[in-house]
Image 1 (cartoon, rainbow, N blue to C red):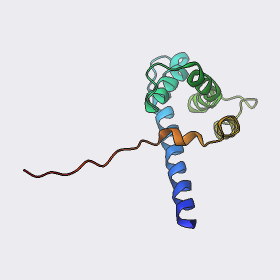
Image 2 (image 1 turned 45 degrees about the horizontal axis):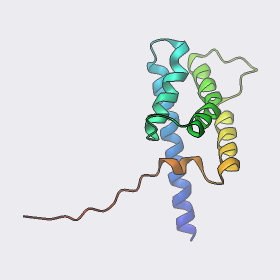
Image 3 (image 1 turned 90 degrees about the horizontal axis):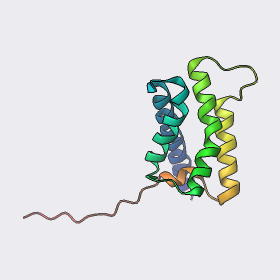
Length: 121
């Protein structure tokens, strides 16, 4: 049981890292700084497989936007002392998602890949 719990913690940490990396990369690659957060939202929606976001998915992305805004501010070094740190904004989002749905946000990144039989001809 302990190994399974540690494996879940590890998987969550890697999913969080991939989310932050992808968002930071999108923000850095944005041609116009004012579109950086929108590009990061789009990239995250694509990572989750949300082609056309439903109202519920839009709410999740809206709740994630303060994290993306803080990340963009930190990346551009325009963060004011009143700006919430990106790490704190991400933790707040994760807490909100867990309270709202009863599950971990990073579970959305799980993709079940069925085993396919290997056939040699």
